[in-house]
Image (cartoon, rainbow, N blue to C red; front, side, top):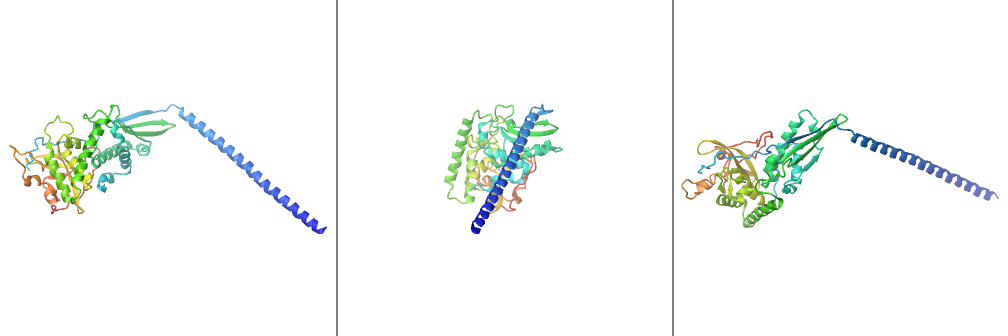
Length: 378
């Protein structure tokens, strides 16, 4: 009998424990249900508030467009050219000098580089630059960042031959809601139908031109595959001198681009220099595009473009344009003419060349590689 009472007592204790656990669980469930309902209510109220705000007519809705040349062409002031005379980190040489906002602009251009071939693609940065544009003097700061970003992008990527920079538009929109101004930014053709240069009407023509230029580069890669760096540079330098003629006509098209240099065989100094970098990039030879001024054979200063290449961790100057002089009365170029500005150090090169890191107005000042003092000796 005593044993039965003990069993009964244990049973009752178990029942009470189970009921207690169930009570706790039920209480928690009811509490969670109440919290969920409260959250749902808050979410619904938040959505209602957002919709109501969106229905408010903005106090200001404006649009600002900057439709000016992004990169001033490097113009030769010597039309007769009477001077007788694996992907490297360098592919991002100018990018690495940008500030954080300019790098974001450059990144958008680089990411959408393939899309730019369409001629009318719009790169939408949305509100990425809202903070800087809302600061005092923010528009001026952002304009410089944009200009610097494009200059760096154009100098690092010399294959943008199909773009007319005067047609590329930076568009800034802003609107005020509840006293808060918000800016959005995009880059595109603006009011232009496209931003193609006058040589191209559609994407198909651009793609054909790219294929043509890539074929030249592939041939150069194949024909120099067993050469050392010096020989690669010399072969490209000599081939460009042989193939390109200095463009003297002021009405010519594409003379500043690799297309004019490598397709038409006519270019001014910028076209020579861009073509040289284009082929050096293909051969994985570190090379940068450089601009500044130069003192010609008549003692006159002119805007000019050339290149720096790297051999054995040292930088040397190459001016393909001035190594391809127009010989008065015809005749052949001598080796003294052909290599006068080939792999030169600063002691010789800077006697008639001066760097200028300001590629265009409103842009930051860029730095160029430091040349070796002495000429390269093979």
